[in-house]
Amino acid sequence: MKKKATTIIFNGKRPRNTREKVVIIIALTIIAIALWTFIILNYVNNRKFAEEINNFSKLNQKTVFSIDKIYMYSSSGATENEEDRAIWNLNINQFTDIALYINNRSEQILNYENAIKNLYIENVRFSGYELGKPSLYYKDINDFGKMIITDENKIENKIDFKIINDGEIDYSKPQIYADGSNPLTIQYLNKDIKTNAIISDISTDVTYDGNLLRKTGIILSKIKCILAFDIIITNFYNQKFISNVYIDIPLEDTDVGTTIYDGKFIKKLENTNLIKFFRVE
Image 1 (spheres, rainbow, N blue to C red):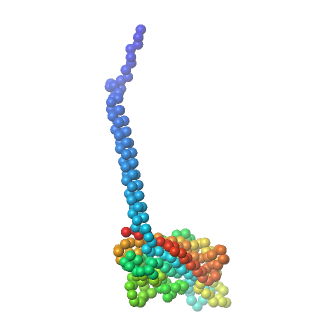
Image 2 (cartoon, rainbow, N blue to C red):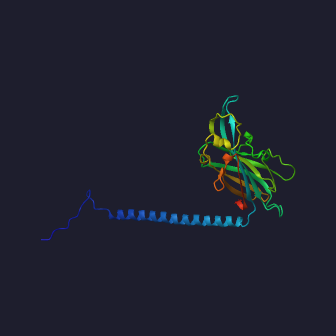
Image 3 (cartoon, helix red, strand yellow):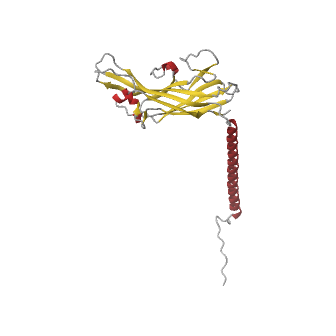
């Protein structure tokens, strides 16, 4: 005797296989559309990136502006908290004066391409330090090597340099010749590395230089800092050039055994195209 086929009934209805197939097809279609969208967008972005690289390469087939020399002078200073006492109570600062020399190939000829129409510094950053409060200032070249703080010269977000075509420059203000013949001078200042530092030995004069760091027990590795900023130049064709500058604040040379503890530390970097300006417009 044959058994009858058994049909399972759900809620009195047969399973809706057609609906399930439709759901699966829709899901697969959505996945396929998403995948193709990703592929197309990725292709477009890669092509756009390649075009940008190609355009950037065309704009920078030759170097118009570069920094070929950097001169740095590092030392220390302090502010006195109390006067006429049998001890020295000091807030210790460290500073580095920096001169950046721009090469615009004007010894050949000064023209609309290599003459500076506008110049400014922006996007100042500090990293790597553990002690103090770093900041950046414009520096009068006549005061180079001295810890002189002028609040109005502090670079908060951006500092514009006035371009001088001829005549005398007022070095107390941020100014530069159109041919770049004078350096950009700035001062890195790390203030209040140690506050209320006591020097009780008053048998000898306290000299405000790098030796203060040794006397007050400041470890150089704690005040190492990388200074970074951008210099933007526009020429008389209104072409825009940007240089990303990174400077390790110089405090010592382990190869020769000299440090800022000796009173001062001088470092000079010099090379053709040491830091290049790249044209972006």
